[in-house]
Amino acid sequence: MGRLFGTDGARGVANTELTCELAMQIGRAAAVVLLKADGKRPKVLIGKDTRASGDMLEAALTAGLCSVGADVHLLGVVPTPAVAYLASFYEADAAVMISASHNPCEYNGIKIFNGEGFKLSDALEEQIEAIVLDHAGEIPNPVGGDVGRVFTCDRAVEDYVRHLLSSVDVELSGLHIAVDCANGAASKTAKKLFEALGVRCEFIGRDPDGVNINAGCGSTCLEPLVSYVKKHRLDGGVAFDGDADRCLAVDENGTVLDGDQMIAAMAYDLKKQGKLNGNTAVVTVMSNLGFFRCCENNGIDVASTKVGDRYVLEEMVKEDYMIGGEQSGHIILREYATTGDGQLSALQLLCMSRRLGWKLSRIGTLMERYPQVLVNVHADTAQKALYAADEEIKKLIADTDEALGRDGRVLVRPSGTEPVIRVMVEGREFDAINEAAVAVCNAIKAKIGG
Image (cartoon, rainbow, N blue to C red):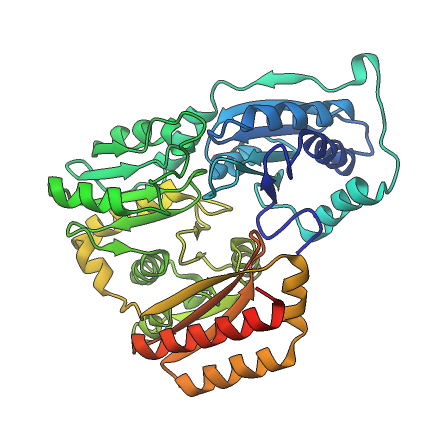
């Protein structure tokens, strides 16, 4: 994890941690990194979600980029995967998304993609960090007509929705579902998308006001979607997060389908179609043990990475795998996208349901979900370092993991985006894993002073 950029961009509380000054400096540094030897102006896209602070940070980023000679094209409110897709489609040199994803409205973030729609490499992020934090190198100050210009793009939503529609190869009309937009970026795209396919949709979380993003709705709060689907006896429902790069689903009975279950089912479907390159799905070490057992039972190999969809994607690109993602609902479908895309995942889930003739509830039974206990121990940077250096804690974790056997495990990791250490214990017996989680958390707190 870098000094500015975590596993998913630079994030913090807007206007105190992620200030306008810092956003402008990141813009200036990014423009320096993007400057070409031939003197051609870099073309940079900027998108944002619905947070009130988005306009403020957009203005600061734009100023920073233009001050070094980059042209900025404003996409307005669009999902993160739209920014990634349009970077390539519009032949930009880079694209920036202003969002803190699933976090509350007071947070915001800056995520940078290259011209092919992939997140910036660690090396390029380190160059930007060095310019911002260490004042490395010289930042040009063009004048007159050499400063960057600002353009407004009016077709971003339409071009992105058209791309998503091109991924659908079965008839979806007649389905009746609920769609939770998390009062975020999907509020601009979901209605156009699903109605173009003839899907009857009931929308919730589609009235953003700048502060209600992810507030009691979306993929981090599924109760409203579950209740709506059950009350109105719908075919199911899908929920996105604030920037719509995640998707979780609910079947017709109101049972949640998480990212692991969706990836397992999609990998199964891709294998049946002969499209599962390398016969492999890629997930992180946080994926449920049931996912690994499901893949074993269906003859599918699994590649496991560090937590973070960037690491999943790196493995997918390296080995030319077609599907990967995270339990949280980040699902990457490389045939169509270079990043997690919630709405694309929803479409492919519905397509699979129609193609196999299965209700969503049957898709959910493909994978047994093992009980999990996930506890967050608050820890600042110094406390995370204490945890990482403590050998007694490492031994306790290893001993606890061994005691749980093949059908259980312990995974402890500092978050790359939040001030917490995540403790996850899973296995077949809830009481046993809950007891193990409490013991590990108490030991960590005692060592780091939590």
